[in-house]
Image (cartoon, rainbow, N blue to C red; front, side, top):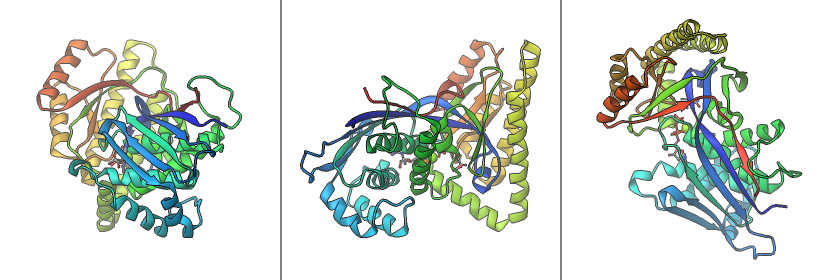
Amino acid sequence: MALEVRARAPGKIILSGEHAVVHGFTAVAAAIDLHTYVYFRLHSTSDNDDGLVELELKDLGLVFSWPSQRLREMFSELGLPSKTCSPECLKVITSLVEELSFPEAKIGLSSGVSAFLYLYTSIIGYRPGKVRVTSDLPLGSGLGSSASFCVSVSAALLALSGAVCADNQQKGWFVMRENELELVNKWAFQGERIIHGKPSGIDNTVSTFGSMIMFRLSELTRLKSSGPIRMLITNTKVGRNTKALVAGVSERTQRHPDAMAAVFTAVDSISKELSDVIQSAAHDDVSITAKEEKLEELMEMNQGLLQCMGVSHASIETVLRTTLRYKLASKLTGAGGGGCVLTLLPTLLPSTIVDKVISELEACGFQCLKVEVGGKGLEVCFT
Ligand SMILES: Nc1ncnc2c1ncn2[C@@H]1O[C@H](COP(=O)(O)OP(=O)(O)OP(=O)(O)O)[C@@H](O)[C@H]1O
Ligand SMILES: C[C@@](O)(CCO)CC(=O)[O-]
Ligand SMILES: [Mg+2]
C-alpha cells in the first residue's frame, strides 16, 4: 500500500443561485483553474504508534500537531469512525482546536482545522501522518476555498486508507472512478458542514467533479457550453464568512417567508434559463453575442435578487458601478458580503477595454483575475 499521495481540487464560481441553493432551489456553478493542493504522508506501521498527526498550512507558515495517542484517548469513547460529526464529536474537536493558537487575523482557520481533525480521525483513525496544504485560492472570498480544502484533504486521506484507488496502476495525475469521486464528495460535504454550518453541497460537488454543473437538492446535471465562457473575477478583499452569511439569509427567510420564497423561486427560474442559454448552440459572432447578452441580463437579475437577500456589500456595489461604465454585467459570487465579484467578458470585447476596467478596479484596491470556467475537478497522484 502506498504511503504518500498528492491531491488537488479546484475552486469554483457560482454563475447563478447562491443562497437559494441552500433552500432547495437550482444553482449553476463551474470549476476554475485555481486549486488547493494536499500532500499526505502516512507513517509506516513499523514506526512507533505514539507519533504525531501533523497539519502544515504552508502558505500561512503554520504547523499544528497532535500526539496520536492523545487523539485516541480523546475520541475513544465516541466509537469512530462516524459518517457524520455528532455534537459529542464536535465538542471533542472544539476542545482540541481551542488549545491551538492562531494569529489574530487568521482566527477563521479554526473551522478548517476542525474539519481536518474530523476527516483525519474518521478516515485514517489515529495512525501518525503528515498533511501539507497549499492553495492558489484566496481564503474566505467566495471562490470555494473551504470546499476545495475539504475535497483535496478527503481525497488524500481516502487514497492512503485504501478506500479508493486501491488497485491503481496509473502514473502522474489522474481522475478517480465515478463511485470513488462520490465517496470523496460525501466526506468533503461532512467537512463543509463543520465549516459552513448548513452547506448545500454545491461547492464540494463542483470541486470534486469539475466542469459546469446545474445543482439542486444534491442532484447534479453536467452542462456543456458550446463555447468558452470567460470571466473577470474581482476580489474586493473584504473579508467575510460563509457560515454567518448563510445564517443571515435563513433568518431573513424566517422573518419574511412568502417574500423570500418568491425571491428564491425567481432565482430558480434564472438558474434554469441560464443553464439552457449556456448549452444553446452559437457558432457565429451574431449568435455568440446574443447568447452572451442573455447571460449578462440573467447575471444582473440574479445580483438584484442577492441584494434582496441582504448579501451584497458596498465594495461589491463599487465593482458593479465600475464595470457598468464599460457596459459589462457583474454579480457577486459565493456567499457575498464582500469577497469576489464576477464580470462576464464577452468574446468580442477588445483586450484594451479589459485592461482599462482592470486598472480602474485595481486603482480601488481590488485584485483582478481572468479565468476560463468549467475545467477539471479533483485529481490525485501517487508518484
Ligand atoms: N487552504 C486552507 N487551509 C486551511 N483552512 C482552509 C483553507 N481553505 C479554506 N479553509 C477554511 O475555510 C474557511 C473559509 O471558508 P468560507 O466558506 O467562509 O469561504 P470560501 O469557501 O472561500 O467562500 P465560499 O464558501 O463563499 O465559496 C477558512 O476560514 C478556513 O477555516
Ligand atoms: C452561499 C452558498 O450558496 C454558496 C457558497 O459558495 C452556500 C452553499 O450553497 O453551501
Ligand atoms: Mg466555503
